[in-house]
Image 1 (tube, rainbow, N blue to C red):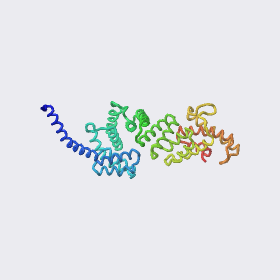
Image 2 (cartoon, rainbow, N blue to C red; image 1 turned 135 degrees about the vertical axis):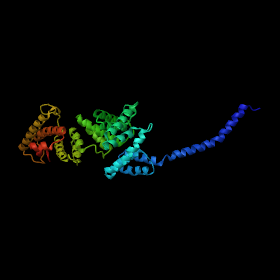
Image 3 (cartoon, helix red, strand yellow; image 1 turned 45 degrees about the horizontal axis):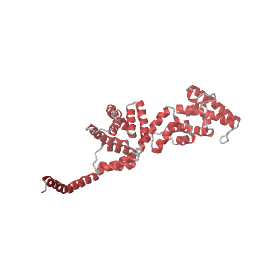
Image 4 (cartoon, one colour; image 1 turned 45 degrees about the vertical axis):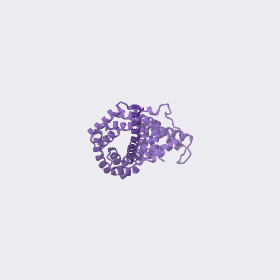
Length: 369
């Protein structure tokens, strides 16, 4: 006689065998739905990857395609607006798209668990662009409180810290901005993958901070890295980069960067490039004057006086040795040129201007080639 428990087990096994094909069919349908995964969202992910590499011309058609397919996403519209300005060269296109992006992003972050650092950052930038300062501050402060001062700031990556640095910039909080940018650079060094453009922008900012701290070699290397990652990074100004390279005594590299300057500092860059060439001819330069005083310690008026003195001695040595452009440097001429270049280089890096001083003192001919 078969027990009721055995009969029950048999019925259960038969029921499971009948149910299994139905379960399999359901899973197939679910997975089929997952594999479709909204083609417009896949398109947006492809576009975002290109956007984060600074490939705006390639990202633009994909962003438009995702939008035309019906994807409503505030970040997509923010990226689309930025790409429109870069590719089309018209800020009106960006502003038009950012008007839509701002409204949609505001709806998204107002939803429960809808806010993200990226969305709050986008909103802050949009309202800053519109000069709507109170609203900008509201979103920037929300982002900082929620993420930088949140429960797990150590989980933030390089892109996150860069955005927080920009938000502190918008709020005019320089110390906090510098700390965030430096954390961004540090975080990027630990990441196997990350946005090259954001890392480049963070390095450019840290390079500026190091310039102000007179850490010229570090700044020069950070500017180098920024351009290696993203050659189109216009936050690395050729003139500023050239000054860092000049101060770091990387004279050939300085000449190349000054030559790339097409901005309003172009004339200063021409003088600076010639000074770098003259410095290279007598390198290495000293960071102390002939009496052992560090050049950086000299007050500006004392520095100017020493430049005048060095220029006078340099000119006298050239006259004494009948020096003409193109001649090999006599030891006496080289000695005085070395001091002149070191002092004038210090003056240039410190004041970021040289032309007017050289013309006023009548020493431009000692610099220009």
